Length: 333
Image 1 (spheres, one colour):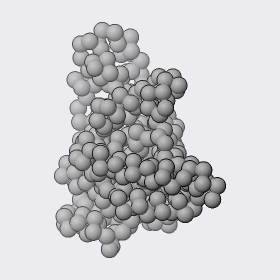
Image 2: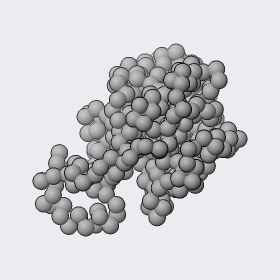
Image 3: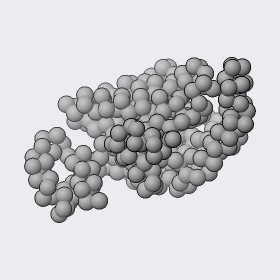
Image 4: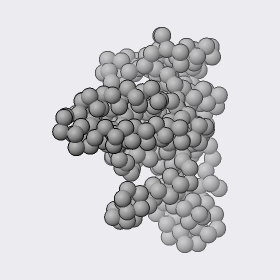
């Protein structure tokens, strides 16, 4: 446990300091966690953060939490005028809570969001401290049941939406030497049957974030990944009704050959399994919200945060560190 903390702590340190401390690893790992002792929270006063996907779920709750911490929050909503989530945020009636229309799939709306943020920053010359790419959609379905259009639809929001918004706001974030926080998933590092369209998009965000992180060291910008486990019950990103609707679409869109080869009983079992998934996760979002807050406020944030139950943490490390044949034998066969 201490060794794990030490490894995670090294991720908080600037590159040069990490190299120096690496020589003391064998001693320090059994004594203390350096960054926990050395790090002090970044000052929040005057800092602003843009969050995408604030209509509900993580984004909505995070907007409230960061506002309570003293941040100026730009809450991007898909439905900024007629949405319940946007209206609730606007009801806070604070000059530090600014709700704006933001469809991450729209070049025009993203460009308008940049102008809005620039015009509403108290000190535009200091830039934007934080960008939280949270907007996302979820989907399921085995490969032979999933249409190319569905792959594109999911990637358009989860992957290309993240890339689009990040590229648009990077000049402001660079000016602040701030933070880019991308919400991916444990399924951005480990695959899962029936989740290929979602995994493809989240693996893409992970790769994009890793590349961007390396490019941004020079600018003093930290790029951070949040990789939650199953919080579907908390966010409502999938419901029993939406699963039924997707299931009907999957079966109707499959070829006759695929329908006959797999059979309706098998297909129905997979849908039942998916429904059980949405009720089995964590119902409290605080693990995720607190990790994002730490990523924005810690002097030495982790490169990756894994808000998840212990059994998912074990599975993630087994799948990403053990030989593939062993991991598949344990969890798939």
